[in-house]
Length: 476
Image 1 (cartoon, one colour):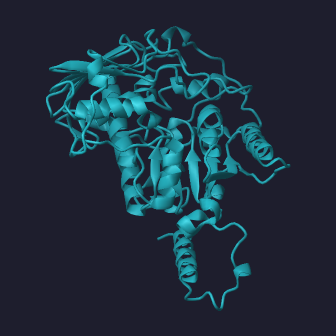
Image 2: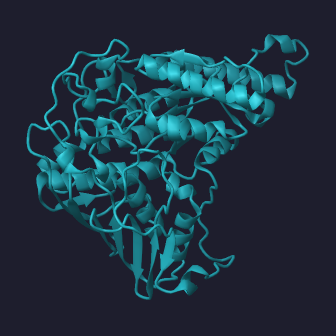
């Protein structure tokens, strides 16, 4: 147990005893800190407020994650952190302005950090949002749970299957609450679609067809190298990935919060197969009841930009997978954006409709904005009785996370579920890179008799951004 964990445990035990009255007679109320973390007091916390630190203050944080916490009654953002000084100051202003307007008086209570480890050392912070690029998901999440913080983390769960397994193990060992940002689970149409499928309303499930948007490969170019902006800690931004010379389109815009270029660079992610695949493959798993397993066979073919281009993630693709239950899952950018469940007695199609998480979300393939559809309208009106399968209900993804931070119950998208959905994405990515069918063992989480594929289960991290088991160069 780290020193920080010992301090957390000691303080938690002390306050727990104080609440029970065992030391209340000798310890005055003035001995308690002004801000008592909610993870110490639980439901006894003032107004059940949870002090949240926001790690990563870019597009998805400003448009989705910070607003998601701010609109709740029990989450309070008390700190912001980013490797870009301009972005962290803008985030501080955003949150301070929100509370100024909400309270009707000037507010300036948000702390700023340029290193997430310093934020995690703040014992007044109960939980963190991790809204960083994909290559900076796993390491801060592991550090956060080791520091005793609960976590809301953007999808995908990891950059590789091996680090996803490490993260899931760490979270479950720590007992912390981690919610993956797969917010489609908290949208009513996705829950309803999956419940109807799980209750046999379209007969025996046979096929799932998934449509994902893609980036336009024509946008990929060779970019000139540029000096690193003085406001950006670029070396730490690269983190565990190999060193690469700076150019703005490799990172994020220095003006505004448009869609960042790192989303289209394989060094930092896998492209839309994880960017949107983490959402839709998760819904496919939910509808099939395969949230804790994976496919047996994967074949994915894709086009890639010319060698040497900066933006080098996949373009048009077609994927076919076979699961142990006999269901075949097909995915392609040619299909309407959403998930179509096809059974022996009908089909159900579900999508986001007009919802977007960010103003710069890419335009989805397909013209339909109907969030829920079926081969027969009667399917959608079908009632599920008390003895039927009723799935976890969440009306708001961020609120569900904060509710679970207080109750210590599992959130709607716990880390293992997020890891398994991410695994499906990364299996497809491995197949498209190796250009052949792959056989997968979802129990051992290894490819069958395939050294080249198994070599893709992990990456070598750049020093000192190394974390493995109980050891970490960066601390915690």
